[in-house]
Image (cartoon, rainbow, N blue to C red; front, side, top):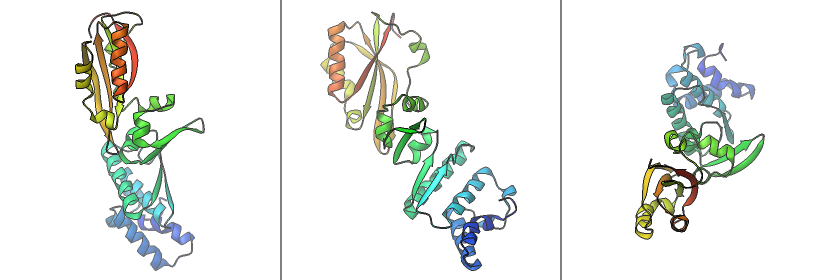
Length: 252
């Protein structure tokens, strides 16, 4: 509220509750210290940065000691550095106060950084939910796959544009691994177990909640149907999910 100081903003819920002034000010001071804004207690919102205003909002939301903190798009208008600092603050509040935080966001990187569990909502319905690393590793709905497209490896456009059905010099496979499957010597096992030559053309491994999640794009050369099936079977036997994306007429 622009006409109130930072201190008064944070104390407002307690004033509405009818708490004594001394108690309100003491709680406001405690929370401003928690969010790192003790020196701004007498300042007005107009003098604060966007990140500082978010910190004041968080402090005010905590004033009445809620059982649940609802955070709706808390980082959507912030620069990357400020976003990181706000997420670190929320994570610290969750840990220090033992407070559950319900975070609403379209930014999957924010979820990857801070959340323990995620629910994906489409048209007002929860379409999937679970531990963050499990949903990120194996998205089941189209909306989740679309949202994750910005932070998970994708087939480079110059390769994707050359994909075709039917025969070709190379078959492009998308291989997804997570957890123990991502920790094993997958490519070494494939090289030793199947005679079809292959190459890693793109991909990467990320870590979410301490669990490795990988997406690899392999180009398998000159494999007939039986050899390709053998390749896919070995990958699946090692815990991978495999999708045949198509063929390219010449090596990529």
